Amino acid sequence: MPRTPKETYKAHQHWVYEAHQQQEARALGDKLNLSFPNGSAGGPESNFMYPIRRLVVTGQDTPSNMRLLFGTSSVSNMVPYHEARRLVLIDELSGVSSSPAGDLDQGCPYWSPRPASREESEEIEKLLRFERKYKEILPCALGGSKHHHGRKISVESDEGYGRGESASPRRRYS
Image (cartoon, rainbow, N blue to C red; front, top):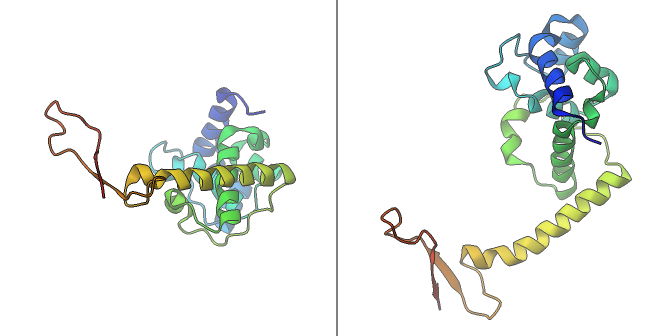
């Protein structure tokens, strides 16, 4: 069960303001090529997903490592951890890297996530099946693909958009 926002907040505060002061946490950070926020809540290092994803991607998402970086080992019960783990496992099972996470992975020393549990595999397979079904339907809305009636659809944006006219695309059938 995901933890409360208060617990997530406390873990994030520990990452930003305290972890960099602990020798063991700094050693782990060096091993994983993690940059610490050093008490500054601004900047990419203070993004809570950054250290979580680095732990997940390297397979170092153990309770002891989480305790070092976040002051608690219960991070694995928090929503950000589940989001990071799900994205990494989708990458792993689909063979496609999640480009939105590219900045978070910059400088990562290696990619070696822990294997998915049976439950995680089932969840990811369900998501990938949904994605495949969605992609079969999606091209018709985006244009350039065959409509289910066999007509080609192209989509153009409205030239008058912004002048009180419709914002919806115009379709031409050929």
